Amino acid sequence: MSISSYDRAFLAEHPEIEVIEAFVIDANGVPRGKWIPRDRAADILEHGMALPRSIYALDVWGRDVNAAGLAEGTGDPDGLCLPISETLAPVTWLSRPTAQVILGMKNEDGTGFYADPRNVLRSVLKKYEKLRLIPVVATELEFYLIDPVHSALDPVRPPNSRDVRWQSRQTQVLSISELHEFEIVFAEISRACSAQDVPADTILRENGPGQYEVNLKHVADALLAADHAVLLKRIVKGVARKHDYDATFMAKPYGQSAGSGMHVHFSLLDANGRNVFTGDNGQGSGLLRHAAGGLLATMSESMAIFAPNANSFRRVTVSEHAPMYASWGLETRSAAIRVVSSRREATRLEHRVAGADSNPYLVLAAILAGALLGIEERFEPGAPLINDNHTAEHVALPNNWDYALELFEGSQFIADCLGADYKALYLACKNQELAEFRGRVTDVEYDAFIKTV
Image (cartoon, rainbow, N blue to C red; front, side, top):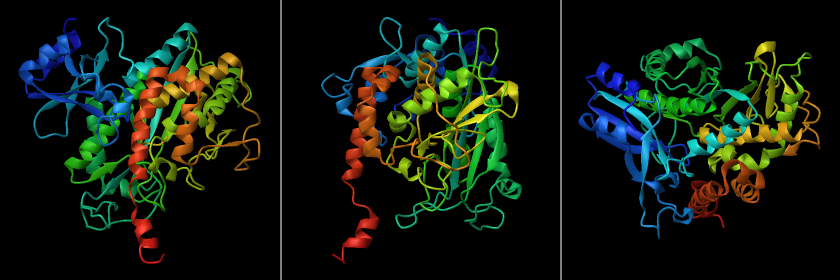
């Protein structure tokens, strides 16, 4: 492999760069890697960099998951990680001139390493290529700005306004004035997105105190759309920290306020570039309905991907705009799958289940695999949801982590979607995290029981 013309031109155009952050994405969607000095950049970009294969199988605390089979008992060998094309970009929020590049691990024969989430999604996309269909994908990510100063008794609170030093705990949904309060942060987020070719679109104030949303533009490359989501999370966190705030994509940081989701919009193009989801009746085409049917049929067994943590299930509650049932509807945000058809040529499905804490590569893999199954097997989604009137025909989604992992473990669809080896790796990571949560006593338990029983 030789250094690409893109990377060579980038280094020539940015002589100020002193260090490069080179990273892969693990099972939790967390970037992990190294800082590389400028004088080694060309070598890394041309020949790649060695990282432990076990880096892909860490729990959310960054600890080895021995049950995943990549660390203990294997000698913890390295794998070769090569740069992903055209991901070398400036990191604008650090004090030292820095660039970043996403890496992907390869096997010795040049094929993709099974534990890399990018390769999981790539394998699903190859199935679409055989059908000459192209998914067009965009994500919407919600997050909270929070005060970086906290304590055990007050672990999360809204950010201070830098002008008047007050903390708003109000909803203020779609407030323009609250965007003004943090204009310096959002302006720099927009500039960072531009510098990294992350196609940020609208920014809006959401339902919770200090909660915001950034929408990304549709791209006809689902792997690139997942990259955009991962990079956006880095940008938001990095820029917020630069301005003495923290940002969290935790699914439910406040027990009594809205959770944060990652909504996925997608349509399908045929070989002629025609949107095959477009229909004549405002309800989409037959292919759209089959795709929706597949998504509903596989939704429960995919919940361990859409809601990957114990906290994730706090978001799946009544009146949180997070679906509790496998349902679909026309222009209704109460459904798990919303048909968006206000512009006929842009007819698409919005998948509203995943939390902002999920791994974008795995979420898109599960969504696209479910839709493909529905198309191939001609699944029907049933009657669309009318208003909020869920009925007995709507399957309740798992509302706790244990049950979601149980369904995940028993699912042949998940094995086909992720690959049996990756399914086992992901399950091992999540079971280790579950065991940690089970071993910790919460403050609620102390408050309720330590003196009263």
